[in-house]
Image 1 (cartoon, rainbow, N blue to C red):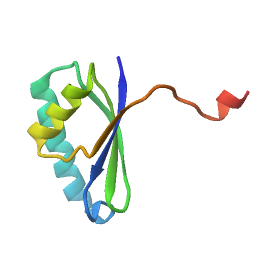
Image 2: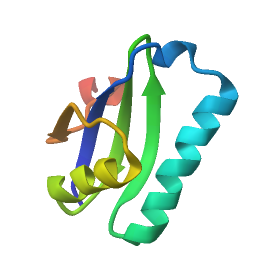
Image 3: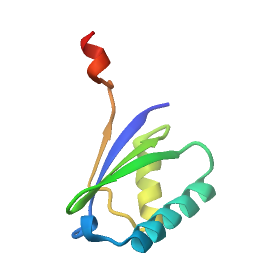
Length: 90
């Protein structure tokens, strides 16, 4: 299944409290449960003014629908074409 990186511009994201991040996570999971197993949230990285999310989904449209239903921005959606890490250099 394709993997996507979603860039969400959320001013002040890095200053969100644990409770606020929990609420966002719960909202995302609620939408995912309604959409079914075809789309899966892997993890997210919170930075100063953005959250970068990693998802498995059959297509970009499903990622956009998740964002729409959850009320989340999806400023950029990119399909991952390859994964590299230090082991790639060996």
